[in-house]
Length: 287
Image (cartoon, rainbow, N blue to C red; front, side, top):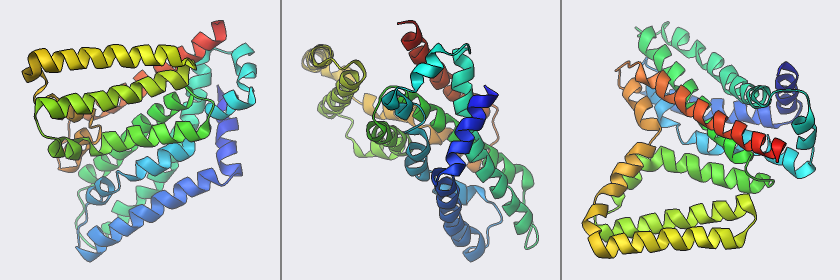
């Protein structure tokens, strides 16, 4: 695992990707620190961090799109699949390299509360809890990006799908407020989502027939439910989108409420998607 970890981490910093990751992150954060902490005089860094959550839409696809997809395209993944090393070590070696990237960024961010203390009173517990929470959010998103990367040979497809998933989870609460709570709106929304799932099945299995059958069965079921008992669909979109909102738990922490569920929630997401990545690689090793 250590060899894989070092290889991936070296690859990021021997190329421009790792440096771009740190540069973009610190540049965007610097803008909001200037607006909130210097212009408005706040000594709490959580406001700036919560304002740049959309940066994950750019940074996560940037660093995860090639980590497994490129190896599948170049067929170098065969070396990993036949190597005498457990699949968990392969997955965690690559994942820890990703986590190290955001970890380096958060170590640099941890200096800010110390600087703010020179100009005012800083609540260090809340400040560092928000920094830890942001780090855990990043860990969760990186695990999602790692899983999506293992599903395709195309870096572009992995990047686009990761961008869509991260954007959806970041904006889920806002989107839920824009969609009417009617049965028709729910039917249309679920139909679009099911079509996207069918596209993913087509990309993953390379089988248009299976993808069409999946789409047709799901669409028929949705249409039948809408026509026979549409009231069951009313208001469900907002509930589903609320459940998909990964940032909502972090927003509670930023507001000053420290809960144990925050680290448990994000670490659980990271573990689930690392496990799904493990299962995908394991299936390919033994197929």
